[in-house]
Length: 475
Image 1 (cartoon, rainbow, N blue to C red):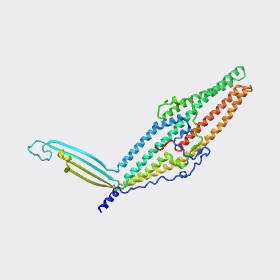
Image 2 (cartoon, helix red, strand yellow):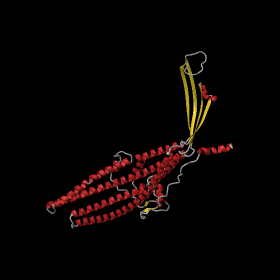
Image 3 (cartoon, rainbow, N blue to C red):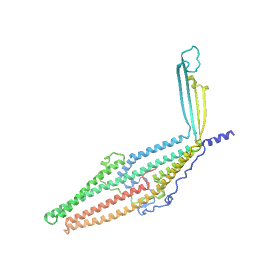
Image 4 (cartoon, rainbow, N blue to C red):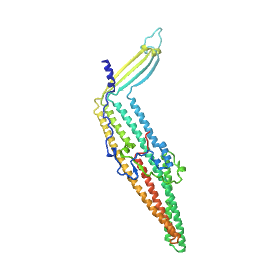
């Protein structure tokens, strides 16, 4: 019988765990099922292969890779997310430690020199007008609140889910950061190329204006044509300043994203370079893998698990709590009593408390926790549907921008052919030089359209990688 009592003691001390057990997130969409496919994917340029986390390396630009790596290592937002992870993990350790006893030690030494008669202490030998009292004590005290109904275990369960949510938030910060760096880098290279084309266009306009002024002096052209071309040239030259300002602003934004002060990358990035080229074929995987990979969905699911655990924490408060306090001490009027085994004194104090009449306070807390869980579930559903919509919209934009680029390239081909023919006809004396220059300006405008379409396609590609939840890797 005694052995049976020792066998059931751990079960009595650990008790049960109240509150609902977490059964995983709810099903939201058909895209969560294995074998599903993206509806808006262009099979000619996308593949169901598993995409790589460091997607920017596929663009083949060493400076872009350097900037993103530096941003992931030094950006303040990532540092903030990492600090929150450390805080959440420390909170988890605290919640786990709350399930264990608390033990503390103390030592006391009291020496009092008091007037005679102030303490009812026996005196020995000759009477004196002073009384000396001494007391020494060393002891240990321990307390333990038994987790009889699992409230503390539910608290640890929720803290663990919060720590995992913090890790997912860091990954989400990395996804957003890598995409933002790439977007700004593409914009920088596009602006630099646009500035080169604008300067070439201004040079052609100046050349045309000089020829037109010569014709005006000979009476072969009107003053109205000269004024019109001067106005166009002034407008083109005025457009150079905003481009230069946008380049400086983009350089500063890149410095901010990498955790550097403004101007830190001017020497490295001020020289114009082509817009990075995206891969010919883009791996996108499938919707189910995308949903498992996206950190924002992982964070929403972990928040749902934490909210579910909080229900159990509040339900446990409705039941009695059992705690045990014990004290062991050694001491006496002499300092040697501190190490004398005969002076040991002990106290064991079990305690039961129960707020059985709280006028509905605990029940209200449980209802609040259930409402928080329902809100977290709705937030999770919203995150899943938003992720699917984001992915499909990004695939649509990517396909449209790709077709737009092909159309711009075809138009540029025609404009360049026209400029070539115009140059040949001018060389034969069939047309004036101004007509040939106008054809060159039209070809420059076609180059500008191709440049803008290339930048938009690159940005659509970056947005697609962000929508796929790429840019982070499991540590």
